[in-house]
Image 1: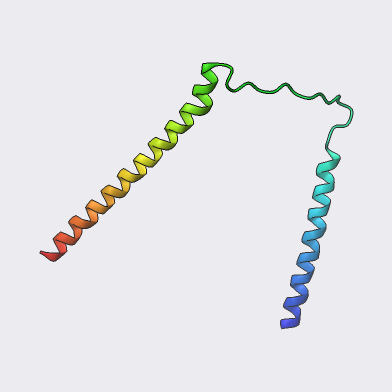
Image 2: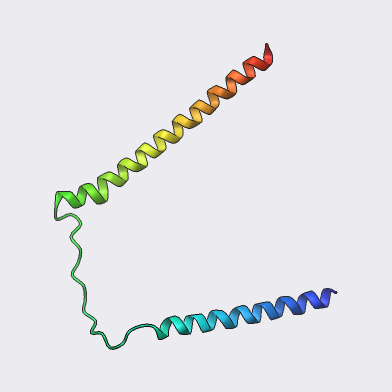
Length: 90
């Protein structure tokens, strides 16, 4: 029984390796070769105030609000737990 499990695991590993190898070859086969490749122009994130607001300020505000909201939820849970303990003690 133990030998059968070992053989089964080895066969699974062989098939997994085989299929992953085939998948990587297929992914490389889909790379277009007839399209001329040019270096893209660098993106100017800090060229305009809209980009700064959209890509820097708003994500920072979202993170700050998320952490404040999470802290408030934890505080409410803590208060509810304290109230429950006080009711149990009475």
